[in-house]
Image 1 (cartoon, rainbow, N blue to C red):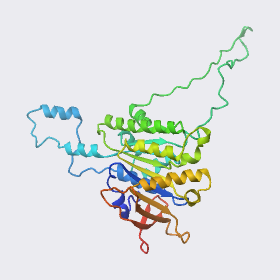
Image 2: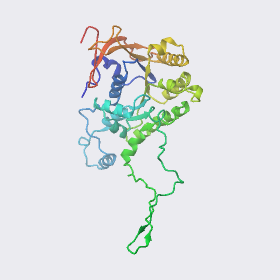
Image 3: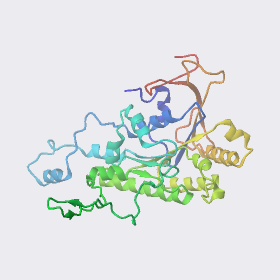
Image 4: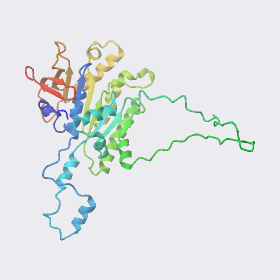
Length: 358
């Protein structure tokens, strides 16, 4: 199992963000924010079972114990604190526009997270914003039409010499097994984004937040707090054209985020901050992208920026991590500005260290 949260990042990644907080993670080509998102997921979804707590009993057994007057309070399982702790654990809605669920599932498993099991408990939900909305497979041309006559064979003569028509082969129908309730619930928490328009994205994400809250309630974990993690929302600006009718603009995306932030506890965004997209601002796409990124940077409480080394490629350094407080810094814990070096190793582990240290 790879290393989880580097010690130098514990003050920034441990615990829940403040209410209505916005955390922005920026990266460039060659310095991806994937490992930072995974460390945030681990921080929010890890199990912190108390060593003194007992395994909670089902409600029907606890009710039977409560009705039994002969049961001593000292021998009754003390699971109230454990239940309260579980209800305070947050749920995470991950929306990814550049990576599918398999990528996040395999990467999270290296950190000890089972996203399927967390989804069944109402702690995790995923919205696929790439494969279903923008690259939906077209209908297969080999599908027979409704007017195609069924295939028939030539008459087969019987022993008496009289031809006997062969049985008609009708259309084949596939039979599938109905999914079990746990599988159906897990599948409902992995949603495809079928409509890449701004209205479609807004409807899908609002529904995903509501469904995650309902799934958590069904699992008996209370309503809890929902953390929204959106990976590369700025991709919609480049993948869709407002002139083509999609209506995805930087202003529309900011309004969408404002609506969603009212329904969740905190929001974490990953954005591209490559120089041609932020500094040049010559084309319409560059202007829209720069407006979107810079406005969110001003609203953010914390900004974690990744870039490559200014001196070029190094064997033992993958890039530079800079942590700053945004103009919207209203956090109860002031952000201490730091700059570290980091190295992403082959198994997904990450080393974070100061300059001159290893």
